[in-house]
Amino acid sequence: MSTLSARNAWIQEFVTDYKAYDVRNFESLPQIRKLTEEQRFAIKVVAQVLPFKVNQYVVDELIDWDNIPEDPIFQLTFPQPGMLSEEHFNRVADLLKKGDRDELERTVNAIRLELNPHPAGQLEQIVPTFEGQRLRGVQHKYRETALFFPAAGQTCHSYCTFCFRWAQFVGMEDLKFAGREAETFADYLRAHPGVTDVLFTGGDPMVMKTRVFRRYLEPLLDPSLEHVQNIRIGTKSLAYWPQRFVTDPDADELLALLEKLVEGGKHVAIMAHFNHWAELGTPMVEEAIRRLRSTGVNIRTQSPLVRHINDSPDVWAKMWKKQVQLGLIPYYMFVERDTGPKNYFEVPLARAVEIYQEAVRQTSGLVRTVRGPSMSATPGKIEVQGVTEINGDKVFVLRMIQGRNPAWTYRPFFAKFDPRATWIDELEPYGTDKFIWEAEPGTWRNAS
Image (cartoon, rainbow, N blue to C red; front, side, top):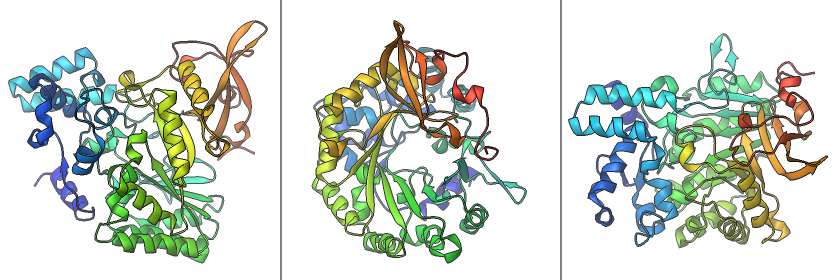
């Protein structure tokens, strides 16, 4: 058995059961007959480079198969030809037709490395060292918040085509974040009493069976970790597999575990990823939300703004209104990150601001907890607050919602307006020659 096969078998031991399809078997879906042979081949080509997995719930309940390929959930889960450059697509397509597996693997891996697999300095700058060892399953970018990537949670019920963590799922171990040692992470937290928030992320921690997740969560109730007040769990499971909280064999056990954390004095926040209002429209997801909220957890929602899927103010307004109706808390509108298939999904910052503002204007104050558009960039989370004029010059108004150096947080600054810019590194500072993080470099580790 290969190393990759062994790892996948080990992970599957801990993952809740569900039927999924990928590049090997997706053509067995009856709905796929609605696609042309050319469209099916394009899916195979792109799926050689970027992750592809979809489950029966998404296929049957969320995708409108009479609106293919434009349907937003189809765009969200099935690879699209525009996700690769024409050059990359043609190279992979030719090798796939020739059947040269060795050359195909070399070419695919080379292409992946060209797609900025770990943006914002994730590998180089925010993986901490503890007791002389780099903790490859931990990221600690902001002083108060540590991220943990449980090894058994580094997959998802389905994969999003735009995913900025696509490198977790393509089998290149050097690109992967994962940690198996819950005890080591707990020791790291004890050594950092300034950490108040822990975020379990992935992949998706909710793919783990409860008996496995318990090993990571229950140690946080130890009195020595009293300073860890908030436990966040990033998950797409409410959208892609709400059965996790309703009908899975250990659903009740999972809810009891979350309730135990709440009763133990922890604030538990489910950081739910919903990208479109269509994901909120089934009886199963409504029941999952009801059951989760009954444990005392809060459910906060977040999504990037992505072309072909939700680049419309009406989509966001309808989604946020539905979320509030169900008792969810809109939290973030993100800007699509500078990685993977960003050229297919990115939206100019100027248009992102318009979409955010037009959507918010359609809602009540309960929706306006949502922040954005926000870029999770190397220096921190940068919010585009709007566009204005200064001395006759058109500028972006920005601020740091969160910074690697806490001194930068909530300080407004300006950038020259550029209607084509999609990321902070495409902007130039206005009124000064440097952005905040360039003028005052540093992190929370060396900030006063």
